[in-house]
Length: 255
Length: 94
Image 1 (cartoon, rainbow over the protein chains, first blue to last red):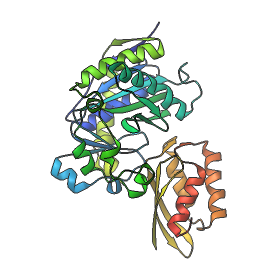
Image 2 (cartoon, rainbow over the protein chains, first blue to last red):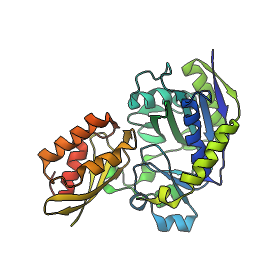
Image 3 (tube, each protein chain N blue to C red):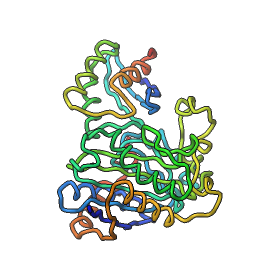
Image 4 (tube, chains in turn blue, green):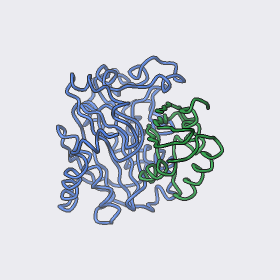
């Protein structure tokens, strides 16, 4: 049976380093220096914007200052998301050509690599469903959003799951253009998202959700997930990416 | 003259265009949004290709189609047609 590496490395107070590690892993997987990897991690109080987004347009800078929210740009497309300690992030890095995603189609990648998360959430009792393009929803409300890329000779998919996040801050720090909300018939971003806690009607930790997703991944993909650590070369690459990219205002806030 | 548009693509993603226009020609253009485009670096190429292009549908459509053919870029939540419509919306017509 195929074995995937599981890493829980995180810098919860340094979102810039978190994103540097996020990029280092698929690069090393693509070079075949690291094995297929699943990573779980948290950020505290951070907006993560998509690589094509304008920070100035998408983010309420004043609200970020008031709430101490940091802003970091990721290397994948998609929309802005708010991360706090109640938000669980997961990332899957596969070598290009992997049997699960043979056709290099980004929509298929999102669908296939969301299946483990959907299965994990269902095991917990959440009626989760994948909703194209890149969401996992419960009764029409988004509980998780995903993004990904096919590059560096790897296939990469990551997502964030609202486990017990503070949705009131989310509504303040993100600017959602009116045109974006029109067809959803809801007045705010806060009303079109939900949390695992709210769906279950009980308190739940991100570690319980993590364990369920690990189980979901093993079931859906027929793999064994084993705890591991980052290699020295991966850590070195992450530190380099931190210095040259993710810690820089030019990367995070321009345009 | 500065022009802008926020255009919602058929797939639900947002394409936001900010461009400078002079006598019907695009001087510079910045395309942002929550769409997916692989390879990601290709968007800069599209912006570059659009410089000095007339703000007219036929020419824009040819350019954007040529971009997708030349780069083999893969859009998700956004299509060639969406980019054209977003740019035309910035001019004041869709």
